[in-house]
Image 1 (cartoon, one colour):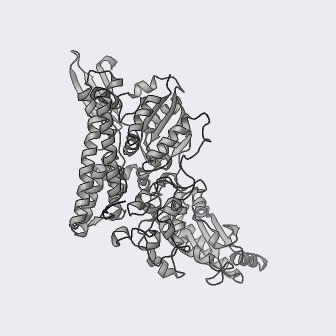
Image 2 (cartoon, chains in turn green, blue, red):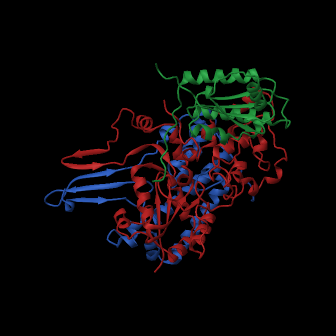
Image 3 (cartoon, chains in turn blue, cyan, red):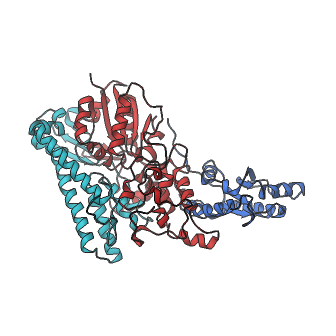
Length: 142
Length: 184
Length: 312
């Protein structure tokens, strides 16, 4: 039987909404794919584009950012900051040969445990279809 | 290959760019074959593709940092043609001022630093003297300093009009980025 | 005996040598204080002269240019062995520079474009029993510190004569700067920008404009006028030359010490000034930034976290 490709997703979830949603998914025993490694950040606006690039550079197959819905940010407009950065970063990643499906921004409120499942499962499926991301090898100091 | 029959000049010096010459001699000591090699390629032809047209003057100037103004100007003129615009007389004069200044400055560089030492110091002079310092020794420190000071002034003039002398930034389709002013 | 100094160029344009020449009268002083033992653009010494020197006999080698082929790597290694100190001179050596944009392609793509249907360079060539070789043309351009240990960095395209002068003095002083130091001010260019005072406290723009689409005001902050000026994400040291020339900063001094990936940080700075919370409006504003990689990684693609485009 051929081995199923298990994509590695680095997920940055905001403390106030998406992380709580993931928690809720857990306590509600909602099953979803185990491929996301969740990193809790205080706000989606805290996700520096360097974090995303670092994740890809270190071999992530996909990066997911989860934040509060527009208007619901705990810090007023951190998620809008994320939205602007992501829009530009998405264009840059595309030029770098990273397919659009590999990088995703989702608004998931604390009540939407079910949505955590849908998003992660959907992303895993799309990444499986794309296959593993091969990060070009870089030469290091001898 | 007998090393006495192979002469390698590596690198060729006093010009912008990388080069190497290999000369092979025949039994009589005459030149049998000579090869000029350029072990260098950066690929501007490829990586300029996909960049916005208006970035070309600043990207192509990096083809050569000794004559960046030439590349910058060629790209700027290409932009004029692309957008089908003719620069107004003032912009044209500013471009000509910068280019003429560059022309003089570049020739001074060639005469003192690059080609000149072969003629002024001479090909028979020791390698350690066949350079700008040898030229200055030959023409006299006073003249040398005068030329250096003149070149500095020319570079300053270019920077005033073009932003930078090394890799100018003033070329835009149909004109220049900075109008001229009476003082600065 | 005077200390020995070498200058060398890898994948570069000669602008860094020109910057040294721009020391003008002071260059004669430098030539008095040190023995320049290798400098292909100006002096007739050969590679074999360097090879014949004892290891560690050169005080400092100033190497500019990125590493694009095997010969450049060999020369970097040779000069490293001969030198006590190696300075990555200019942004190509420091971060990859404009030749690093080639990392959007690979060796095959570049050779196919440059030589088209003509004769493609062969690594080995024989004629009449004489054999010649060319360096290996790498797929990926790297910065100097990817192939040798680098002690100091001098940013800029090219570094300015003032910074070069300060660097030479720093290296001749009894106490050397800390290893790995970037020999330029460690703050953003905005702080030395002549238009600093015109920069609004909360800088926001509805749309970006490209330099040829607008007659830029000569006094006002360029970013506030909607021009993509990378001053906020770029290290100071150039005295804002481009901005004085009424053109936006393109980032040739690279990042400050607190930033690992220049492009990511510059991108962040630009994205954050968009005055909109609406996705489609944001997308519209970004249409005036048609080439993010060429804009934000113009001088630093090889040393970015991703380093190169992934080829199909």
